Image 1 (cartoon, rainbow, N blue to C red):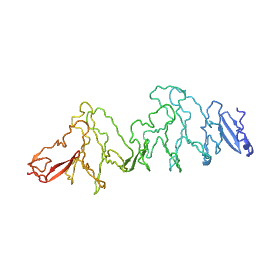
Image 2 (tube, one colour):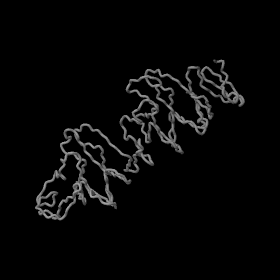
Image 3 (cartoon, one colour):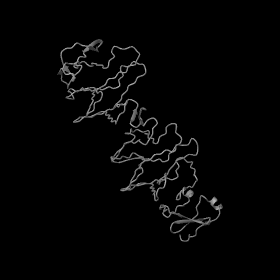
Length: 434
């Protein structure tokens, strides 16, 4: 090999133009290839078949335009054209026969050795892009990766994983950051919107016999939020569900939902405490005149003529069909409670307020009322209109709910309706005599 120690020298551009696809070099004993082009000596790493390509002695150019073209392996600004279906510029078929540890076909590392001085300065271990040079171009995919099981091989390890892409962040104790960290960052710099759908992430189940468990699964602990949309702005809704119903956080403290929502929960045996199928708790600060707060506001609206049976804003129901009663207390379809404390004295308070707003100009029905009382089923054991469970009567005391006193002539009548028959509850303006 020592006999080939002269560096080939070529001058001018005629030979280079005619032989641009050939490299004539002299290889010395240290496996270095050298060539003199127009007075400049270039050194290349060389190897025999089956040996390692070593670029540890490579010195990158400091010319920005040249460095951007690639300094170790490059096509420059030339795009070699492939016309054979399935062609590839680089293909590696490597067999992992390692009994332990990890294996990689390509292991690329990039290291940041200078301080960041501005925005949009990245240290990238890999930079891939797919572009087009004609209209009606093919689907463009910047990076495609597979977790592929090409044959009918079985895997019985319950902890085994197959995935197309794995993204992770690692650091060391004390490696703090005032910025942000994302195991996966998806960005879109488009200035045009695709007509058939334009999203940052697209997930689909390709054809196949298997029905998979879901689109996304989150495991582990140490999470503050499941999903955080606080820095985003949505024009129509935060979430669109399977049948186009939506959930929209249109403003701070305002959640709007469309569609019919059903909440189903199976509690099993209850040993202690109280459980809520749906719970809403609202806390408010100082209220000014004309304001009001409700923890739950339900509105049923029907503006089209029809022949429905009922329309209600709220429906409550307690069902017990076992052979024995599930409670030792009481069953009720709805319960309302007003709790006061401290030294406050509101102008009025009640457990339930019934409001009727009737501005209809149609004819009145005889059954119009503030309260409907109906009896369903075959039994008629609910034979009391009221049960004053915790009140006792007092004689001649107008300050209590129930007072015993001698009969007094009625001054007023309160109308009720039993079926179609009017009933009158007699009342008086005369207070019980103390």
